[in-house]
Structures are given as structure tokens and as C-alpha cells.
Amino acid sequence: MSAVDDRLAAARAGLARVEPGAANVLRERGEAVFIDIRPVVNRVAEGEIPGSIPVERIHLEWRLDPEGEHRIDGFDAGTTVVVLCNEGYASSFAARDIKELGLVNATDLVGGFRAWAAAGLPVRAGGTPAVP
Image (cartoon, rainbow, N blue to C red; front, side, top):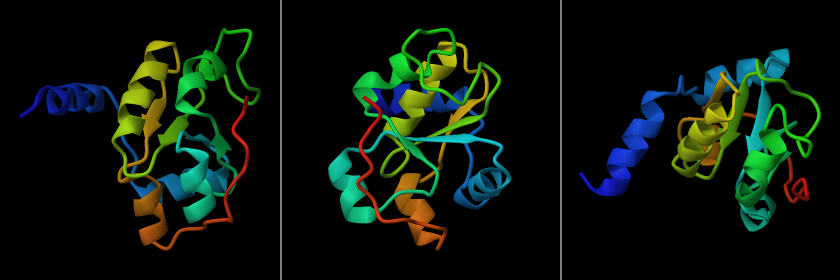
């Protein structure tokens, strides 16, 4: 295994990762906040999960620090936060990082947005601007 594979395995070891179908149940019940860290070019080309909040990876920690003055509204330290990227790799690192900030229920979407779409789950036209 390469160093990045080792780091990815370590990041995932601390997460209760969620499969697309189970994630959709959370979404439908309003039991999770979905954070889309994909670049806008991917969101425009492929679409978005309805209700997801786009946050560029570079801003993620500031927007999701449950005690931070720059955090987005709609969550607290106990909220389930599901991070998604294209295929579920970068999101594992991102979920680990925000979990370390105090979001104890942070996790990521197995297979990312592309697995969600391949499962035939709801997708809306993309291109929503990221939270600044």
C-alpha cells in the first residue's frame, strides 16, 4: 500500500461511512446535512443532491466548525453531516477533519456523488454557488 492508501484507511477507520441508499433515507427524513465539496465544474456537469450545501474544500473547516464564528447555519456538534465528493475519497479525509473539529457524527458518502447518481437516487441540475 502507498502512503496515501494508508492515510485513507486510517481516516475511514474513524467514520461510520454511509451507502447511497441509506444516505437518501437520512436526506428524506431530514436527519443529516449534506455537504458537497466537489468543484463547481463537477456540480454543473453532473448535478447535485437535492438539499446539499456546496462548500469548497478550502473553506470546509471554517464553515463547519460547530463553535466557529464563520460556520454555516443549520447544524451543531451533534448533527449528522455527510460529506460527498466525486467518488468518495477526498470526502473521507474531509469528514475525518471536521470530525476532529467536534462534529462527532461527521461521515462521508461511500462512492461519492457518482455512486449516488448510479444508484438512480434524486439529482437536481447543478451549479449552485459554494458557500463563500
